[in-house]
Length: 400
Image (tube, rainbow, N blue to C red; front, side, top):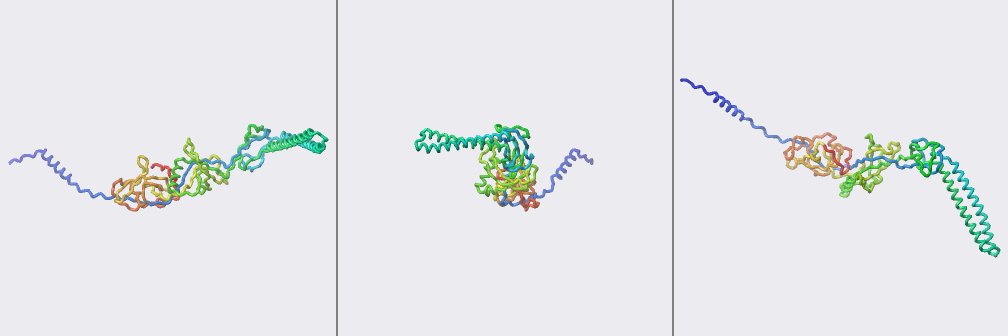
C-alpha cells in the first residue's frame, strides 16, 4: 500500500505548536523580598542658634585734624601712619602774627586798667565832695559813669587777650584723640585757612573697633517670634557672644559683644544695622574690611537633627524625608529646616519625636512601599552632633 506524504505546512504547524507549548511552561518567579532600610529615630535636642551676618569694620573713634587759624605751616612733627597720643603736637603754624595780636591786646588791657584806676579814684573823691555840696550832683554822676565805662573797657581788654591767647594756641595743631595717623594732607610751607577748615590729617582709634552688621528685617522678625513663643532662650543682648570670620576665611581669635541694634529698617534694602565691638590690640582689623560675624542668639531646645543623606528636595525645593510608619510603609514628610549643624540638617518642623527616618537605602524605596527597618550604621561624624552651630531660625537651606 502506498503511503501518502505529509504536507510540509502541517509539519511546520505542528512544530510551532510544540514550541509554543514549551514556551508557556515557565518556572514560577520567587516571591518579592521586602527591602531593608537603615533608619534613625529622631528626638529633640538642644541646638545653638547662630546668625551669620555680613558686615564691615569701622574705627572706634575718628577725628579730622583741621586748621583753626590762618597761616603758613612751618613743620610737621609726626610720622605718617604712626600712633599718636591725645594732645601731642602734629603741626606748627607760623605764630608771629598771633603773638603780635596778643601783645596788642595786652597793651590795650593795660591802658584800660590804668584808665579804670583814674576814674575810680575820681568817682571816690566826688562821692565825698557831693556829700558836702562841694561839687554838683551832675559831676558826681559823670564820674560814676566814667568809672563804669572804664570797667567795661577792662573786661573787653581781658576778652581780647584771651581770644588772642586762644588763637596763638591754635598755631600748635595737636591730636584731639589717641590713635593712628593717616596720610598728611599738607606739607611744610602750605597755607591753611580757618574759614575753609583746611583738612590736615585724620586720626583713627583702632583698638577697639566697631563691626557694623546687616540683618534682614525678615530674619529679625522670625527671631523675635521664636523668642516670644518660647522656642528660643536668649540671654541679655550684652551676653550674646559674637565671633568674626575674616576675609581670608580665618577666624578672628578674640570674641566681641553686641552694642545695639538699630530700630529703623532701611527702606531701600529692607535691613537693619547691628553694631558689635571687638578688641583689636594687634591692629588686625582695619577700617573698611569686609567680615562675617556669627552671633549666638540662643538655644533651640525643640530642634531635631537629621543626617544630610536622609534629606532630599522636591521640584519646588522643599526638604523631604522618607519616614517608616507604624505599618512599616514609607511615608514622605516635608520638613522645615533652619540650617545645618555639622553633617546634619536642623529640622524645626515636619517630624515628631520617635519618627524613624530612612537614611540608608532611600534609593530603592518609594512612598507606600513596605520596608524592613533596621538601625542605620552611620559614620561617627554623622551619628554624633557636630560642634558647629546652626544658623538662626528663618535662614534658608541650600537646595540639594
